[in-house]
Amino acid sequence: MANSGQKVVLITGCSSGIGLRIAVMLAKDEKKRYHVIATMRDLKKKDKLVEAAGDAYDKTLTLLPLDVCSDESVKQCINNVKDRHIDILINNAGVGLLGPVESISIEDMKRVFETNFFGVVRMIKEVMPDMKKRRSGHIVVMSSVMGLQGVVFNDVYTASKFAMEGFCESMAVQLMKFNVRLSMIEPGPVHTEFETKMMADVAKMEYPGADADTVRYFKDVYLPSSIDIFESMGQTPEDIAKCTKKVIE
Ligand code: NDP
Image 1 (tube, rainbow, N blue to C red):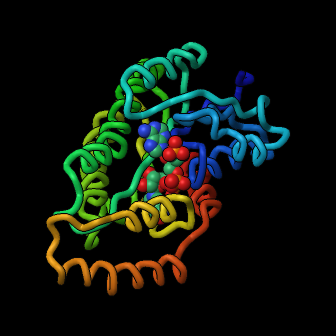
Image 2: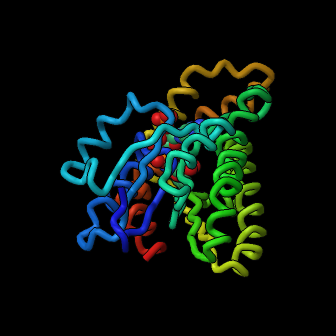
Image 3: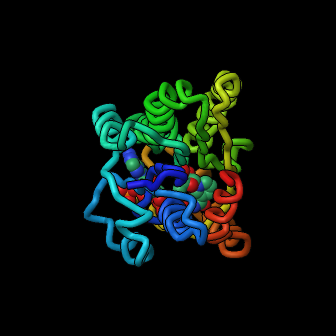
């Protein structure tokens, strides 16, 4: 558990990508300023994180299960934190969704909102009372450049990040009075499993309901150019972890 003087940082979605890198970077902080509670919905996926954390594992980094889509899981996770005391909450867990809107089921759209919007709301609701009581705390939210600007064929993902940004901007004003900070990070493309997972979903897509021109535009124009953008401009998860560390320092 955390030593006195160490800040307790809880991070969501640490099985891969940006969350994993933030967890490792903070746990390996040279001044040992942080005790990281790295969470993931399936602890069977912990090996990559444990390996990257090395000596920090079980010292400045501990693991807890957490599915941000489940009220029960969120409550249980926070109850498992000593005195429910969290200094810094990093809402990182998120899912993407790509394709012509006609071909995407409402069910899949709800899953994106459950994670990217309600997942953040659930976490903030749960940690906020203690932070307000202590008049101290910092909530960080991993948004996206798509939380600021709509992008073709990312309609639902963009909407989920816009919704989350609206919620957080409004919450930030309320929390400020209690000395609780709320910060948003808005990365452009980042090379993580996010991209791989979306491309795997796209490969299985059958395009029900979409007209031939839209499908052609999506497959022949949008996808190749988006891959080019990722390849030429994509940042690394370490870049975003460094930025997050600066934000909380
Ligand atoms: P990854 O897919 O590598 O990581 C996403 C993480 O979120 C995984 O650990 C995943 O866990 C977790 N997650 C998904 N659903 C849940 C859930 N219900 N409960 C708990 N954890 C969950 O992608 P990134 O690291 O790139 O994404 C991290 C954040 O950064 C996301 O919010 C994303 O929107 C944002 N972002 C990413 C960009 C990019 O280009 N990669 C650009 C801008 C923003 P599991 O392994 O169980 O699926």
